Amino acid sequence: MKISVITIIDNVNIGTYLQSFALAQVLEKWGHKVEYIDYSRPSQDVKSLFWASFTKITPWHWPSYWKGLIGRAIILRRQRTIIKQYLTPQHYVGYSSIVKDPPIADIYMTGSDQVWNSVHNRGIDKTFYMAYAPLGAQKIAYAASIGMADFPEEEREETKMLLESYKAISVRELSAIKVLQNLGITSNKIKLVLDPTFLLNRIEWEKIASPRSLSSPYLLCYYVSNEKFDEINYVAQYIAKKRNLKVALLGIGNKKTINCDIFYKNTSPSDFVALFLGASFTVVNSFHGTAFSINFEKDFVSIMPNRFTSRVDGLLHLCGLEDRKYYSGETNLETYLSSIDYSKVTPIIGDKRKESMEFLTRQCGL
Image (cartoon, rainbow, N blue to C red; front, top):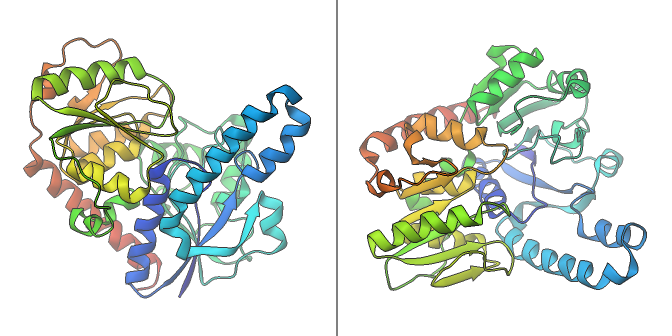
């Protein structure tokens, strides 16, 4: 069967592309033809932003703004390589473009990441609810994320109507189940599953890792939001000193934001996997940074971003690893030096991976 997937693939977050790749790998292994809709939100599309700059930005700011757009385009091209084989030939920008010429498939799937976060999407983006699919089409959601504590009041009625067209919905956070239930979606229609990156185990991820490595043991820092650099640096330097580790920074863009021995800038998804595989310890402030640390059985500290923390909280709670969460202003870091007992954590992930696979096989007709 042909499965058409819509998910967020227009930003510079490496985790976005790794979760897309993982889901495609599983579905393809089962014999399905997988096609990701090459979709950009108008607020994220490089070409749209370029043309908008002529009317929304003063002329003397054009050079620096355009330089930023060029850098963004280069990063996107490098990161999207991992899912290039799955992309539709046509690139869509905004919901109106996909309505004019929608993809045709046997199953329509909303993929993971914060697809239903109307803050990031600048309101309801009906593309991520697959409103373009034919009436009566088989629509499912796998590991969809909301991120927000609740839908804004003015969006609740329309959001409920869009979600009621789904045959089945799975989400990756316990908090999302409560949000959907409060919206009026029946509980028997919702399933809690793992993020797609957990569908592949360490051995399977090793197959796509680049040969990039460090000769000395290292602590890896990874962040996605431009915040809390002082706290990330504070925690990383303390642990690196105590464990006699070099500090490697994996950041987005070209800016070195914390003290480190080596800085990897604008890396590929394959480099990301390699650096997490080789790390002795990780300090992260993202969901996928936390997810890969757990999947690869790393000792880690997860520093909460300023908002949309329910995704990380839910994952840590599932694994019984709430004590690996760093709280702002915390000064006693000794507890993070202890090693994680993965003999308790890995079986939890294994059981949940089995449940997640069963959900997919059931909904995809296998």
